[in-house]
Image (cartoon, rainbow, N blue to C red; front, side, top):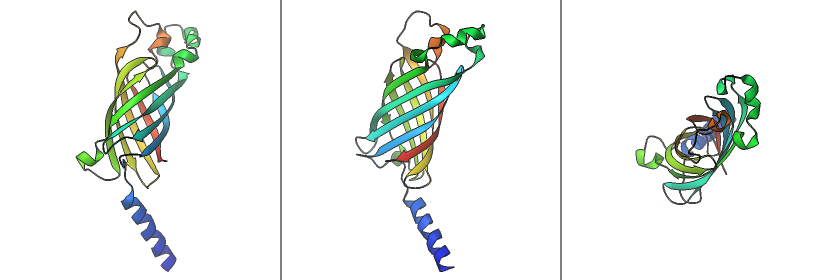
Length: 171
């Protein structure tokens, strides 16, 4: 019985001490699903804390499954080559968890990103269950696309509103 009480106490303390963003030199790795109108895929990102509320990082998405709504002809979906399915972005975040003071385990981070496909913005949220593990969600939207002429259907991937959902880890 004493061991059970000790275990519950230690777990409770680890939940209490979890913090979503620690500030300077904080390292976050996120992996999850990427949902778009025309496909689903994988999202991976890394953020590094520069200051109390500032972080920079990289994010990458790859569309695995494409929706037949991408074009009127489902055979055209095969024209979404690697360069259309893949996106890589540099990102800047303003980590506002400590400013909002909702919970030490919760962080809200609006930000900007510059990628291979566009210049855009995101709004993300993280919640940590322990010092090392939590969940995240991000909403991304392009502000400016790099190609000014009409996009072919495959180029609309990563040039639309997307949602990422997955796990986040402290490194």
